[in-house]
Every structure is written in structure tokens, then in C-alpha cells.
Image 1: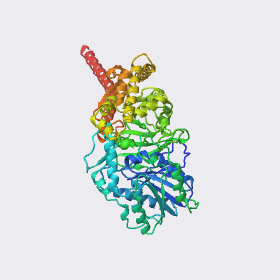
Image 2: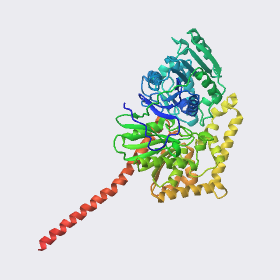
Image 3: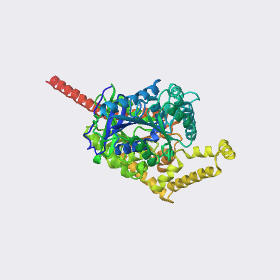
Length: 606
């Protein structure tokens, strides 16, 4: 594994962060002049994805208090190298924490190091130890209980989406993030009540108010000689999985900053060199671009000259790795095909600059097309052309806005799109309330015997069931208005058709892909006629369906099916480019033969 510098040519850096790599792990270093460094040990998988916004806010708060701070991705997580099939994954995660601590001491030059961990990250930090201070945020005390919790959450979410689940006792797949059976076995062995040594002399345990298992762990830490402070989390919900992340729990973070920073002194430290990741197939570098470098992304380049470039847009509030790490997996697979890619964050999402309103301000907003235009400028400066935009759900809507605005977009792949034009705040709220499943799916669930049995047992209130029907009724009413000339819905359909007709006339190739149970299919019918007949009449537009796909295309089945379609779409573009060349060569050959034939005839006549 080689190190590659982060590219600075596309922007002037104003933020106090530097992208770094520590072995196979990718990370962000938050600069500060202090003698105590902090290493943040994130939660894993879907939990880590949902907590990303808060995790970055905590790193910013620590750095603002004069504590140099490192955020990093474990091997097989986030932007790091590795995959979930590694049978030694948990050991590699522990090893990455040790490497991060050593890096802070040796490369940055801090006098002391504090570890701050969330959920399983807190448990791994406690097992690794060897630091001056430790903060455990809702630590996983017993790995077996934690695994049961993840499995229950996975089954609940899979059932709500009508997706298959893994057999009990085997791997756990939660929103596309997979824990293999070997990793599950390793997690089951985690038990903080059996620690052999105190991980740090001073420890702060931030308790999850819903659990009682921390007491035995605290008793063990004290028996090992650690001075332990405990505090109940005031806003633990802000760190738990949710479709749209809550604002960071700044009161809780203030307590963490105060504990970690107590007794630390200001000191000049070394500025780490920017880094990236490289394999035999690809290189990856972090970019900052746009006005004042407020936008961020990761550029994945194949080892040879790129044949084309794909810009991957955020899905909902998820940052650029994608749910189930799908964007990372797709980017590296495309690199094997010789295709470059930029997985980018819009303003308010991921590593890009925060804005008022948080990630929600980026959803379905036409003004965010400015972010994509800035990305295209950055790519053009590097000589990368033949741009295809790829987006899922809200990312697909952003792709439409960007393509309408910038003629450099040659193609679009729109997955599970359900908004094809401008949308107001009220419509966005309705969209986020009713979810992303097809109406038929909700009706079948609401009318099932199991649903009514849950009502009868008191597990689900009748009011909740009624609210589901009310939301579906509103959706159906809006659909009828859109399909007729009785309301604003008709205008939305006209706008959608106008947008796609404009792009088709410009020669933009478009592929629309939907899951067979996704609500986007209903929207296609409402805006473009049954089975999208209006779209099918346009040149360069094709539609496809993935059976059994989840909305975010995060599951392994969905990822693989989507990658097949992306690959075929890009290959067809290559064939279109090569065809004129072949016709040109054929024409030259024909003219040459004709000239030879004419010369032969003249010689014969003479």
C-alpha cells in the first residue's frame, strides 16, 4: 500500500482539516495547537453512518478547544481499504486504533493521547487502552447483547421494506452493512466486565439511559485502579440510527470536551502530511473544491487513462460513502473497468461545509446544482471529461437539476428517483413522512392479519395505523391531482416531461432504474404515463427494474444488480463513441478501394 498526496489544485483550503491515511485507514485530522491529541473511535456500519454528522461536530469542538483530533475509518469501513468478508476484521479494527494512537504520538508529536469511542468503538477503545484518558459513549459492555440488538434492528427494517433477512446465528446485514459470521463470533466475545487492565487512568463513561449493564463495567474499571466518572447522556437519540440525523448533542459534547481537555496545555505540534490510498487497481485522493474549498469528495482514479468519469451524488443525508458503503464499492469496481469517479458531498452533507438547516437543506433543492457544477469545474481542471451523473433518490433529483444547468453532463443514471422537478418544503415534508415504499406495499402491510394482531395486543396503537392510512390517502389524492388538470400536480407532470425532453434534445443519455416495489415507479407512471411511455419515446432514454431492490440500493443484491446496469450503460456509451470511428475507417477503406479500382480501369483502357 502506497501513500498518495491529497490534491490541492482544485481549491484553496480554509478549513482546519487535512485528509490523511494511516496504513489502510483513511481519516481526517482536525488541526489544533495542543499537547493532548484525541483519537475518535467511531461506531460501525449503519450506526456509524447515521452518527457521521455528530461525529464530525465533536471533532470540530475538540479542535476548537485546542485538542488536535483524528477521525478515521476502520479497515473495511467508510473510505478505508478492506471489506466485510475479512475473518480477522475485529482484530484489524483494534490494530487500526493502536496505529492511530501511535500516529498521534509519533507523527503529530502530542505528549498525551485520549481515546473517545461510540458504542462498539468505545468497547474497542477500552480493549486497546494504553492512553492517558478515555471517554466511552454508550459503550457496548456485552458483545452478545449488542449483536442481538443489531439483528433485531436489521429484521425490523428488512420487514418494513419487504426485504429478505439473514438466518439467525449467521451474518447480520443492517441497511446494506454486513457483519460476517466470523465478525459476529468475534463481537460475541467482547465483554468489558472482564478487562485485564485499566485502559486509562482517568475514564468518563457516558451512559445510555435505556441500559443498566454499565454498572458492572464501571465496577471492573474501578477495581483495576482507574478513576471513573459517569454521566447520563442528555440526548442519546441524536446518536442513534434515523433516516434523517438529528442535530448533534452539543451539551453532551461539551461535557466530553471539558473532560478530555482538563489539564491539557497549548503546544506547537507537527502538521501531518496529507495522504491518500492506493492499490494496484486505483488511487484515491480527497479533494476540496468550490468557493473557499467548502465542498469535499473522494476522487477514485484507475491506474490507466480514464475512459469516462462518473460523479456519485449523496443519497439523502448519507455522506459520500453511501448506505451499505455502496458508493465506495461501486467506485472501486468502476476503476477496474478504467472509469474514474468522484463521490462527493453537497453543502450541508458529510465532509462539505455545514449550512443552516443541516443535511435536510440539501434534499431535492435545485440550488444544490451549484455544487455539482463546482465538481465538474474541478474535474475539468484535471482533464477528466465524458461525465455521467449517478444518483439514488434525492441524488437522482439533484442529477436532473445539474444536467439541466451544465451542458458538460453527457449522461445520467437515475436510481429510484421519485421527484423529477422542483418541489416545495411542504411536499418534501410529505415525502419524508410517507417513506419510500410503494402504496401497494403499505396497504398490504396495514391490512395484514399480523398488523391487526399487533393492534389488538397493544404493540401498535390504532392511531398509528390510522395515520398510515391518512398519509396514503394524501399521497393518492396528490397523485390524482397530478394525473388530471384539477390541481398543481398536473403542472409538476408537465415540468417533468419538459425537463426530460430538453435533456433528450441535447443528446443526454439517461437510464432510469427502480426497485419493483419502490414508490418512484408510481411517480414515473403519474408524470410520464403508464410504464413511462413518454420517456420511452425519447431518444437515448431507457428504463429498467431491479426485482427485490431496497430503496437506497444498499443491500448486496441491489448493489450488484445496480453495478451490472451501470457497467452496461457505460459500455454502451463506449460503443457509441467507437462506432463513428469504425464507420470512418470503413469509409476511408471504401474510398481507397474505389480509387484503386478506378486506376486499374484507366490502365486497362490505355
